Image: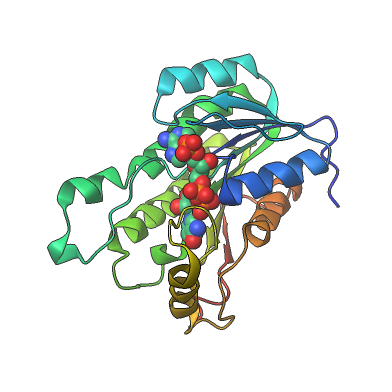
Length: 231
Ligand SMILES: NC(=O)c1ccc[n+]([C@@H]2O[C@H](COP(=O)([O-])OP(=O)(O)OC[C@H]3O[C@@H](n4cnc5c(N)ncnc54)[C@H](OP(=O)(O)O)[C@@H]3O)[C@@H](O)[C@H]2O)c1
């Protein structure tokens, strides 16, 4: 169990799925955690703040208030995502999918100047960045941009560290499907993977915790994908 006593973490998109699991692990390891999301949230032992990662002024205010904080995790999806093949793609939808990247860029640009020099940032990309899968060209392009941003910005924000976690298909509230449809979606979507099941938010969040805790890691991406990329 890591010891995050006396550490302060801001988790954007920390009210659901992967971000929520990271929030709970940070809290349970002793960190003071501030969660930012657009909707109100109520998480035991955690301060919730309503903030849109695309609203730079709101982010600036949040980071100024917590000047000197240690960890920034951004798992916010940002907005709507376009699914489908390129030649049938609604181009506004494709463009809007990049809200996730801009939310990440906003938070690093505005957050890092307020962080402790031995602080660390973790962003979440996704396996379509490096593995073609039908219908995921928009989110794959976004994920690829996120991974490039992590590697390149690591050089500019050092000594603050920045890393990414690339999840495979993870069972989170992001998917609105229910019942049998949901089971089929995760079963069919992972059937060809080395570990043929959907991952859990906790499995991804434990990689987030590793990247925050290990002070010898920066500019890299950890795949937590059940072997999706390896197939
Ligand atoms: N689940 C998967 O299979 C999977 C696979 C690969 C990558 N990922 C990536 O993992 C990350 C987390 O996904 P998830 O599955 O955990 O999603 P999720 O359960 O839908 O949670 C998304 C979180 O982001 C917040 N959020 C979304 N847009 C926001 C905005 N503009 N400003 C502030 N907060 C915002 C949401 O709260 P509000 O709606 O209240 O704002 C919520 O807390 C995302 O980057 C996603 O692309 C997920």
